[in-house]
Length: 308
Ligand code: RRO
Image (cartoon, rainbow, N blue to C red; front, side):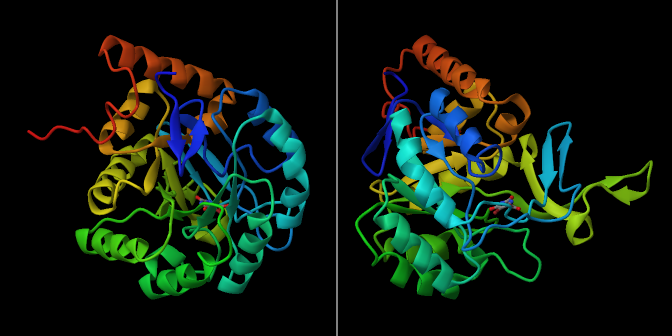
């Protein structure tokens, strides 16, 4: 109860669910999320057609996180559309992630999910791992043109998965674009794109795609995620919910994102490494921290970061 929350007026039993990415591509993985303590079932970003993704090795665990260049492996959006009524039997909200290669693809997929039993639609503007395709979220004009059309397709809440920003001019520009449209939530952040990890022993990159460049995830990126949540929570109206992602593996991490202004958090690398048990563990840890501090609701803490 203490850690129940809402995203776009959809109630979530807890503050914590899975991020799009790890362990959410296949129906059996999504069913496992259904029976876990994850507050929602979030699907792997989908494309028009099924994809195998990039060449392996494309994921490497690191001491404090991971680097990956998966390349959008997924079953194709029609498979998820068809699966949704079965997933819905788990009795928890379903969030679908869509990641088309063009505005036309995204329009087709959002339109299809608008009449499905999905509860929320997260449009991924920030995949860093497709050769020759820039992240939409780093192109402000393209983002605005896309939102003009994507927000017109129905009444189901739409959210945006954003890349990390590192400059206040970028936070301001993106916030001003988002405010022009009925965007219900944003999810900050995707992986820190196009980083390079080198193995000095073998003198080699550690993943194969894109000459070793890949998205950095986990502990390394928590301060970047916190900064993005904080900046957007100060720039956007409180009616737009912010979902925090990036380096959440303990209740303390979740509590920090709550202070920064998140209405919920998603877990990726820790879920990849630990499996579905992470959701119950992190939820219990967050609940204990709040109980010890005598906070009785998410609302009592959300955005209440103190300055020194
Ligand atoms: O599949 C991926 O390579 C991937 C995606 Br779609 C994304 O949005 N973010 C990421 O780090 N990897």
